[in-house]
Amino acid sequence: MKMISKSALLILVIAILYFLISENLLSNNPMVIVGQVFSIALSIWARRSFIGGQFSIHAQPGEQQLLLTGPYKFIRHPMYAAALLFIWSSILGHISIITVIIGLICTGIIVIRIVIEEQFLHEYYSGYTDYSAKTKRIIPFII
Image (tube, rainbow, N blue to C red; front, side, top):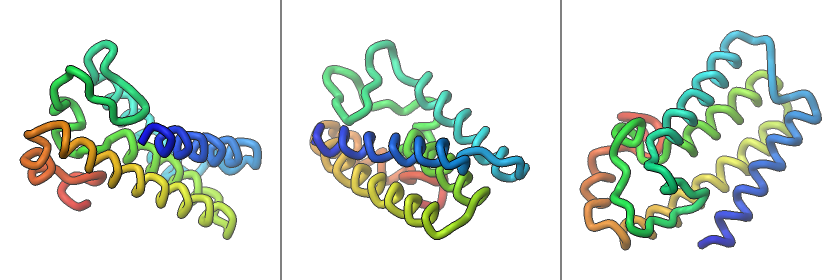
C-alpha cells in the first residue's frame, strides 16, 4: 500500500513539474484561474480539517477517528478532487495531446489510489460503509 502511495505521489509531482517547466501549468484564462484557485482552497480546507499529526500522504489511520468534518462531510477524497481539478484546469488552459495523456495518466493513478485506499478504510473503520453510502468520492452529489 505504501509503495503504491509513494509511487503515485511521485508520478503526480513529476506531472506537475512537467506542466511547470513546459509552461503549461498556469494560464491567463479566467476559467483556468478560477479552477486552480478553487482547487488550492479545497486542498487547504481539507488539510486544515485534520487534527494535529493525523495527516499522512497515504491512508494510515492509527488511533484517529474517521474524519467527517470540513470537505470530508461532502466528499470522501477532497485532496484527490483538488489535485484533479488543478491538473485538468491546467490542461484546459493548454490543451494538447501530451497534456491530455498526462491528465489521463494522473486520473488513472488517482482512481487506483482511491480504490486501494477505500478497501483499506472499509477494513479499518466500521463506520466507513455508512459514510461512503452518504458521500460521493470526488464531486459532491455526483461522483
